[in-house]
Amino acid sequence: EAGVAQSPRYKIIEKRQSVAFWCNPISGHATLYWYQQILGQGPKLLIQFQNNGVVDDSQLPKDRFSAERLKGVDSTLKIQPAKLEDSAVYLCASSLVGRDTQYFGPGTRLTVL
Amino acid sequence: GESVGLHLPTLSVQEGDNSIINCAYSNSASDYFIWYKQESGKGPQFIIDIRSNMDKRQGQRVTVLLNKTVKHLSLQIAATQPGDSAVYFCAENMRDTGFQKLVFGTGTRLLVSP
Image 1 (cartoon, one colour):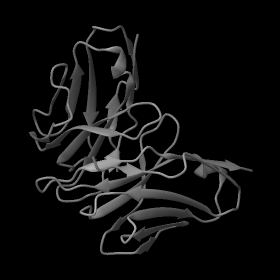
Image 2 (cartoon, chains in turn brown, red):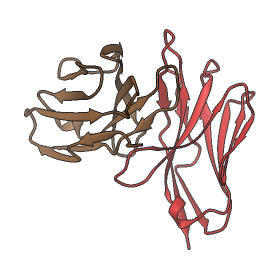
Image 3 (cartoon, chains in turn blue, green):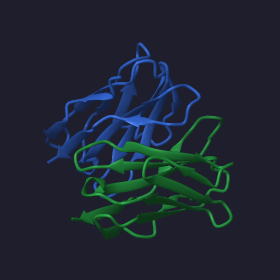
């Protein structure tokens, strides 16, 4: 079974620019998560979707971050405008509805200069 | 706020030794715990999980122990191999309004010497 796919794997931008990340979850996984992982720390949840609806976005900096999952399958996370402190790995994870185990993608490493 | 933490940031062992990675949690309402392994440049990889109604669960070369009395979780790796070198995270499931919310600790780096 294919795992969670993410692209791009690496991105370097200058501050105030915008950037978008893409995630395709494991087939059949209705729940999708975006995490931010700053170097040396554990992942921190940004937003959780169930199908195309937002379940939890309490830790998403909504003034600059946005995410969507229009058709309930793949998802995009956008940052506009980026700040230096947004430099991190952005991880996507998915799980079956009602199941606790989350499976992670390889992540996108973002560097903001 | 409540959080998950780890006692040791780095653990160095020799190949063939048994490794024990510890984790403290503070939310007594957490009902599910999970260990992930993260190698450099990769996403977290599921290792083993345990529910709060269990004290111990075994997998292939790994065992997770849960002590709810002192809110402590540990991961035991038997016969540690160089391929086990990675950062290990514990996470607790904090159910908020009925939905799962995993809260991760900082992580412990395991270094295995041949």
